[in-house]
Image (cartoon, rainbow, N blue to C red; front, side, top):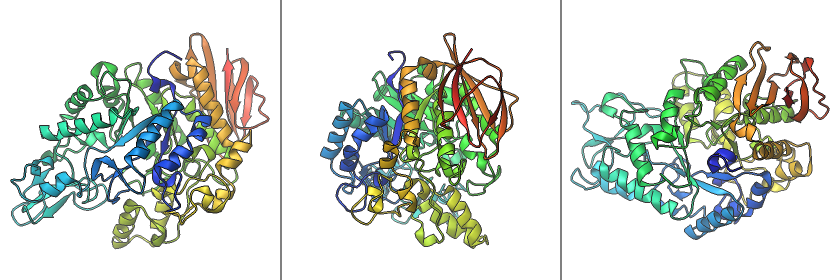
Amino acid sequence: MSKGKWWQNVVMYQIYPRSFQDSNGDGIGDIQGIISRLDYLQELGIGGIWLSPVYQSPNDDNGYDISDYEAIMPEFGTMADMEELIAEAKRRNIRIVMDLVVNHTSDEHKWFVEARQSRDNPYHDYYVWRDGQGDGDVPNDLQSTFGGSAWTYEPAVGQYYLHLFSKKQPDLNWQNDKVRHAVYAMMNFWINKGIGGFRMDVIDLIGKEPDKMITGNGPKLHDYLQEMNQATFGGKNLMTVGETWGATPAIAKEYSDPARHELSMVFQFEHVGLDQQPDGEKWDLKPLSVPALKRVLSKWQTALGDQGWNSLFWNNHDLPRIVSRWGNDGQYHDQSAKLFAILLHMMKGTPYIYQGEEIGMTNYPVTSVDEINDIESIRMYHARIKAGYSKEDILRSINAKGRDNARTPMQWDATANAGFTTGAPWLHVNPNYGQYNVKDNLADPHSILATYQRLIALRQANDLVVWGDYALIPDTADNVFAYYRTYQGERWLIAANVSAETNEFALTDAVTEHIIGNYDDQDIQTGRLKLRPYEAFVVKVR
């Protein structure tokens, strides 16, 4: 395909390096481990890797606290390993998209080490400092995402610094021209190494105005992004995707309209909140409403028009496994895993597969706080115990939504530790690796992995999948999600029964070709269909 940008035509694959493949037996995934699996990723058909942070870091928040942007964490390898990964991926037509964290650094970054020495230090203004309120109180009521105040007192300077995340993740002061240009120089360091672009962590927070209690979507955010575009990746064949928790379609268009020279696309998370109580946190659970899912995804499919570009995802390193979350990881494991693949990969936008999603990896429930590694889950556990919640309720929430669910080691085969490591893994391996692993999936032409390979091949071979218009089919059963994609006179119908119950679906078009489905015996004919539990299919119609 020649139309459009490379990133509009490919499927991306996210690697969480700590959990992907260990090459040296220390129990921690590493860059050489990733290199050893590039042939597998090529066979899967992906065109780009979103690589979670591998920079130097004390690892307070699993690498999202960077102490040196131009060095590699020794656990992961060396800069020579990183250069080899970029080159070896390129040989296989796979681009490496670096995860970039520029809202904050580690408190061990040399800038902050200097900044906290004195108010006169040239680096002091690289971060956000405020005096306390008269009686030694914090500057204001801003809260950290991880719980508690977003302000921490630094006795050496007699001021508080801002951290929207952990207190070991001080926020950079984007209003300081020197900070911005130091960041751009670092980005160009990586661009010159031949990477394919950047995934930009919590990028909607860089325009914060803490005195006005503004964190996301601050008034100068888009000015900064346009300046960044001009100083770094603009005019180059690079992909940029912003993590924007607060984006609406109108805001997403501002980011991704090519005429505005900002980003290629954003991750929006409106669908991600559909199984939490409206006034609660992500831990306050409620069942998924499929009609709400249809409404939200359809809005994003149509509202961006030709001005913006969608990113499509169910999973990432922060989210629970989709087959456990909204599918059925018991009786209908394979069918529901394939359903979510078909539903997403037939939509317009760039799809992202999170490592292990392509073999239907599941959540791993824990029974005690001692089994939890994730800083966010641990803090929530202790805060809610203090607030009087029952241990059972808290663990139920963590087992549903905790970030460790996504971070258990990749399940390669049925040997010890799922083939991830010859040592002791840094995080527990899900015991179901004998049932769900890459080796078995590759050997089975009807596997979940085979479905992902076919979906990727369909996108590569059909302009309709990339560029076609989207239209939701209204008036279906609540749990039936059906839509059309149309392009240059061709029309495909996608239907999915997001339910463990049988549901009827009226197929009024004439079927001319069965393209893909998740039951082996599908014979889709015009008329009233009885869709089996988690049944999904794609047909060409006229």
